[in-house]
Amino acid sequence: MKTLTLLLSFSLLLFAATEPPYTTPGKIYESSTQTITPSAGPRVDHGINAFITGDFIYWTARMDGLAYVQTGVSDGGSNANHGKTRYPDWRWTPGFKAGLGLSIPHDGWDVFVEYTWLHSSAWDSLDNNIDGINPIWDISNLWNFAADVFTVQSARVNWKLYFNNFDVSLGRNYFVSRYLTLRPFIGFKGSWINQDYHVKCPIVTDEISSLFGMKNDQSYWGIGLRSGVNAAFRFTQTWSIYGNLALSALWSQFEVDRADTRNDSRNDGLPDRPPLNVTVTDINFEDSFHTVKGVLELGIGMRGEWWFLEDRYHILLQAGWEEQLWINHNQLAKVHFVSSAHGDLILQGLTVKMRFDF
Image 1 (cartoon, one colour):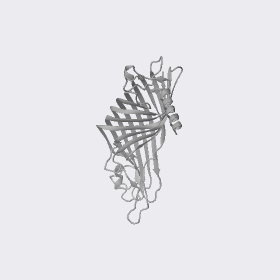
Image 2: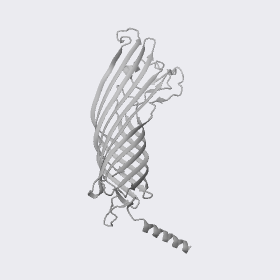
Image 3: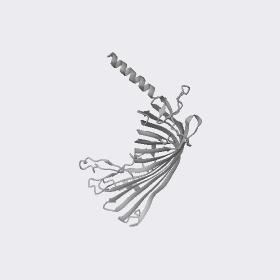
Image 4: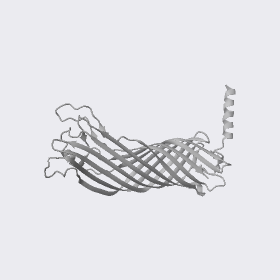
């Protein structure tokens, strides 16, 4: 037992002697005991300590409050079949990030600028539902015609997202223990996001046969403060688990345009009916306002990094899961209060990053 204890003690002493504190592959940064939070770099020899990054993202984009119809309704004369609320069929879409940074001599600070691009779309349709459909959006006063639940038996929805974002940060990456690094940062976020949300509902009654359509488009830009922290839990000098957190408050402008149309192929010819086979716009307005909106960003994954050519260059590879929550981002125009009043924009998925320092 004493022999085993001596062997374990010797092994621990040997490990401590061969593993200098505050190390990264090939480099030791400010390991002096005079430094409270030694810089964790990464830095290279005989270079300008600039770096570029590129990310492949494969995300799904979703927004609350985009339901367009409900099934499982009855005219009151019989029991309704069990139905459900229908939403766009959310899909996964590739995108990218591109970044440029510089590590400056002052206390190990770094400046980083990153751009994110993502275009996504989702759609859904419901055809010939003989049990009837309850439209969620009152398109061109559709509810006046759809008092009979069997009036609407088909509907279609289409949603498109155009997402662009810039992040600028000033941070410092440092050791808080032998195997834990933190990079707190402050900076700015600038975004412009456009969305198109279109719904179509054909209806048939004894008096009319018509196609009702709604175009509900939202344009957004925001700029404001962003702050957070990047953490790395190191297993070895090469491999680590990373975790990212960022919060933003953006001064934002929403511009929302809504146009509802109706095209009758048959009607009873009353004075308030539109001409046949002519698209008539009977709701057409916009809403523009400023406010402050919050954004939450989270990320976690695995990372590996290496130096090469006598520490003149550094490369980092990582892959993980990222989530962004754009709080209360759904400001689409409503004629009446509906169950899809407001909601959040959610972006999440796989993010694969490469960084090159020189």
